[in-house]
Length: 445
Image (cartoon, rainbow, N blue to C red; front, side, top):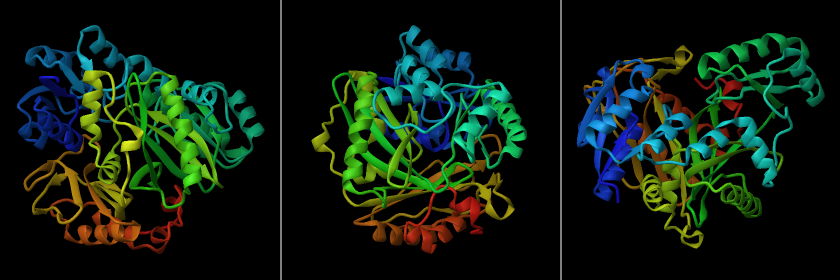
């Protein structure tokens, strides 16, 4: 096994990776920006290296500084977590060239599946249904409008080189097209350095379903699905497994097709294949070539540590798991807790945490990196922790989440805890009568 791993990330996912490394007996190196010197991941790691100032481009995205930290500490491998450099094929390639193991897929596969247009073509080639849309990236406005008219409104304009809701616009009618197309191109250029966009059919009442996979040289397994349909402006807020709307016949077909594609492309590592689901049909959306924020719900129902499996696959080239060994039990729900004020249009709420009491108890898990006195800065993503509750069934998981949210106390900053209390108790959530547009259409807080 690896002797030392550098974690090229921060916050709760860095803490999560350090815990997995400790259970393998692996030494850890934390990188950090100047404002993160007192962060939990820095405190828990065996070594730490400051790689730059608070701006991500100068620290967590600073490849030369991270490579220097690797050389300085003698780390054999790098775990990128999610976000930052986790899906950066150039970073992965540099590591490969320097004989440093990237804990994730090859640079070839990151590039292949990170290009949304190419990923769509690959999915189609290996039998996954795809969303009707443009065959490739588009820059020309007139060409884009012609394609949109052919598909029929509403259509979705998406940045070819990114995700997370950036560079994404819904066009409901022809008159809106030009302005939204130019705005999407501008955002795509700003956030991803590439103004190429693509166009696809927009679904009115979709669910967002994803399949977790682990894949090695000799075998690919799935860890069943997650339902991530509670979203605000394309950002996930609550995730759960299993999906309350799928039957076993649909699941079986979905898993078979997904595993087939992942095997056929020779993918190695953890990954998630995402789908739009509407009116009983699935459509390939994208593949994320990293660990997902919502991976804990899968872990608690399967009993499998996904991060430890990532490390095992990176070291051995294969997964030790067999499909027949994976038997999910019960139901799990995750709430993402963000330092935001929902009453002020989800404005970020940086500051120093005063009292901090995190819930515990039977089948209650908190993944985070916060503590009393911790300073939440405005420089990074606003998610500060995740609350995961496991029950024998969905009803019990909801009850446990209610109880756990009531126990959660964070003072000094405003968080989304109160919003989650309302969402979990909402009739539409309890009855699973919602889709990805629910919160954008209905005022909850």
